[in-house]
Picture (cartoon, rainbow, N blue to C red):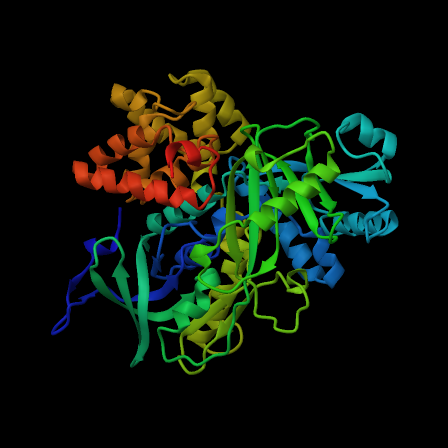
Amino acid sequence: MNHIREQVHNCENEDWMVLPSVDVLVIGGGVNGLAVGREAAFSGWSVAVAEAEDFGAGTSAASSRLIHGGIRYLENFEVRLVRESLCERERLLQNAPHLVKPFPLLIPFFSHNSRSARILRLGMFLYDVLSFDKSTGRHRSLSAAEVIKDSPGIETRGLSGAVLYYDAQAAHAERLCIEQALDIANQGGRVDNHHRVVGLARDGKELRVQIVNTLTGRKFLQPARTVVNAAGPWVDKVLSHSSETSNQLIGGTKGSHLTVKRFPGAPSTGVHYEATSDGRAILVLPLPDGNYLIGSTDLFFEGDPSEAIMSDDEVSYLLQEVNALIPQARLAPEDIVHSVAGVRPLPYAPKAKSAAQVSRDHQVIAHPTLPGLFSISGGKLTTHRALGELTMRVLKRHVHGLGRCPGESRSRTRRMKLPGARCADWNGYQAEFLKRSILPEPTARRLLDLYGIRAESVEALARSDPALAAPISGTAHAIGAEVAIAVREEFAVTLTDIVARRLLLAWSDDAGLQSLEAVAELAATELKWDRQQTTTEIEAYREWILQRRPRFAKDLFPA
């Protein structure tokens, strides 16, 4: 652990602790901010990352969990973005095979579609052309009869055929954030969650950033040669703590998803289709646990992004559209396991008539009144690494002057595997680990899916302490050693960090509530909590999970 508290000294005449100066401070520990930090660390820069909540706790955790090229972006003629996305999709399939896996998607052709079958086929042809170097197969056209045979639950009225193609799925998107944080720390960088920026000003040749630990109240002063504001939908909020007078940069849109258990007529592949009511793209996506993720909405949003929750209108909209696609599903609100909502950090576009018209591209914005400060707008889960590379090109030019600068060659991260994938043959490693593991096969498979080759560390703890090898009460296959790893190696400092974004139990059918006290007991041992603190942590998780409208809320949180 290389948290802030380990590297501070007293600041004269102020109740602030001054930290060692760094080349770049990244504000925001979502997937994009961490990608910037990782790129900087592997470029030889000294790095610090300050995240107000927890790594991946915001928009990154509220995505569709697809790693995709963005076929619908072709409608806006964003060909460069589609090509970049497809390249990054392939890189993630190679560099994080434990977390990113090929994922088939069906696009059905209905008579109510605003886009004709001919246009959709043309789009898929261009998609294949732009991904000529991919490892997955090309798209395949299906007749109506073939669609009905393969997906018998889909509505047949007005169905004329479909295309089947491959993108990729990162079902455990939060883990992409954690592994990038690990890389930054392993390169000597500092990554601090629950550290909120409250002030930003120029001081001579450096920027000085005021940071408060939201859990302890301790205050820090971070000098940095450059600062990257990668706070996602909170970018403008961060700028409000400085003298910067830029125009509004972020015009976020809310995207909400819900999960349900397998239902009558449920498809075996993902389905990407056009809503009957408004023509929006809707996704029905199988998850590894057998549940289905359905979404998303796309609504202009104003207010605090941390307060974004799925509305009743959004629930009705998505259920209505899924029931139209799969009539025998007959999904109702009581079928929802839980929901998740987040705000996309899209560029402010006051002239856009709908959220769908706002570009999904990313850009790095310089602030002339505060030299050395840069903000990021846009950005997707798929292109986070490319955004990190772009940001470092901008920062290097700022430091070295205009034009190309020393070290501006191809990024090391293009071919660099994430920590959980650093082996010669991932498939071979999986087979060998399952063969020799002392753990039950379902547990061993869980560890491989969440930790990759780092499953070795989890199992080593289990071998050394029988209490940590035991299954966690209330879970299917999680073990106590995962809690220890979350605290000792993965920067977790609250119970919600552990349950929601390390063990990912928030995605289970009971939203992690049945195992909460067992995990809290293990966490209390690791973090030296007393009974009062442990109770506080349990209540904090219960309050947090209520935002996801878990199905069991009415039982566990009686009115």
